[in-house]
Image 1 (cartoon, rainbow, N blue to C red):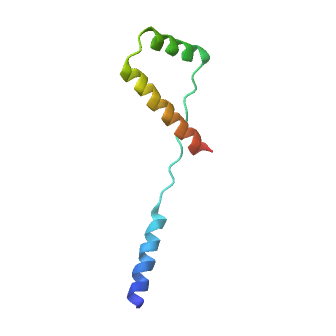
Image 2 (cartoon, one colour; image 1 turned 180 degrees about the horizontal axis):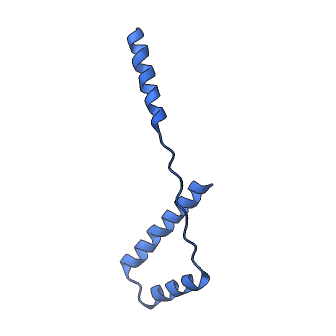
Image 3 (cartoon, helix red, strand yellow; image 1 turned 90 degrees about the vertical axis):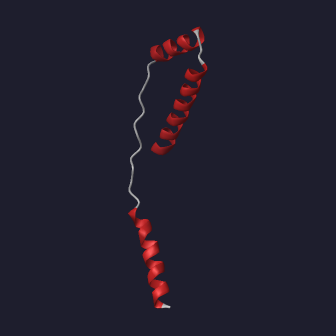
Length: 68
């Protein structure tokens, strides 16, 4: 019975090895940068570019949530 208790305690103590990872910082884009990107996409949208931007938007949302 003591052996089971010891194994249980060792299993629980392994959870304490979690390391803190700080949130990455967001890059700020000016209104001019945003307008230039929008113009490029409207001029000739390529499906992979639109998908990549969508992925990047999702990552920025995750960083914002992490920073709260």
